[in-house]
Length: 95
Image (cartoon, rainbow, N blue to C red):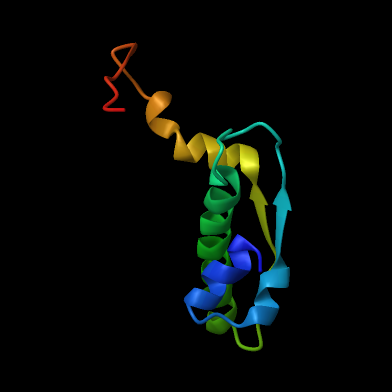
């Protein structure tokens, strides 16, 4: 079971909806010995799929739209504190 399918199942989502999520893989982003890229993408994918399902339920007869998760965008979001500047300077990191 993929991380996406596992997370979606853990939330009680319909297993068939996982196929609505596609990914744009960007090898090398969020490099780690642990599956950080995969888990980060799955987290974003599950949130986006839940939003898509909600939107479909609010539309009479609406079909759950497809969701695309781009690893590059996910990686930027997950390390966004590294890109934030205050008065042109990076903040201090705790880790």
